[in-house]
Image 1 (tube, one colour):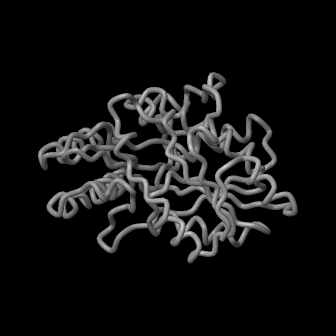
Image 2: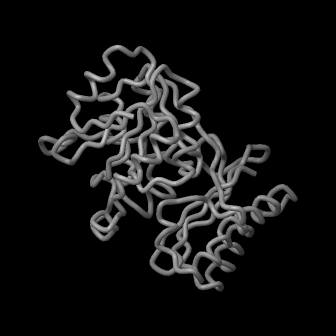
Image 3: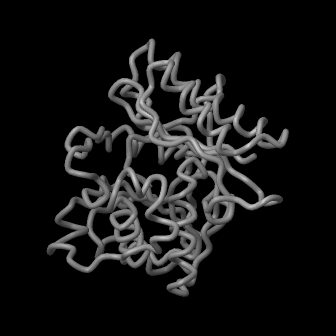
Length: 273
């Protein structure tokens, strides 16, 4: 695997390829990220991953400075997974001047749920993803379903800008007990790790109750109360229309989504209903 740090080096390495398949990450990689790389290998003539901790998507009180940066170990994992090229720019490489031009996502999709609790988050995500797409020029980009709202936002951005690439989704990777793999799971204590699986279990229960015809608002309220009683600080536990995260109408395909803080760690998850 070849590692490059500048946009010029990246473009030189990709100049002879026609169908790059791209996996953007912030590093601190786990098996969920590697599943994206395995999928990307099936889709293009060269597999590219990026590692960049994007300051633009962190709020002032969030963990940008302490976010784990494990480039050496990550590079070994990517090479073992069959990645061909790693783009690992510094902030100066990717943002050589202040990034004053930004991508403002559709507020109907981006200002609810994660966007409500992390204002500006999806502007930061869309801006860096757009820039990475311009650097790599992929024909395919692979994202995980764990960040479901992000997946929908990126797909809508690509569609509305008529970008010549396909966004491919990979199902959420989970530990044996059902906890969604996440870089932030490493922040959990042993006791918190045992408790953390309750988020996915409550989302599964919400889905079961919805399929049984329960009132969605009542299901959501009971789930919030249950998680709070267990010592969590939930931001949202909701049942939404799978296609656009709006409040569903009867017969719509649903997804259960949740975000909650356990100790100092904020976890998110979702399950199709």
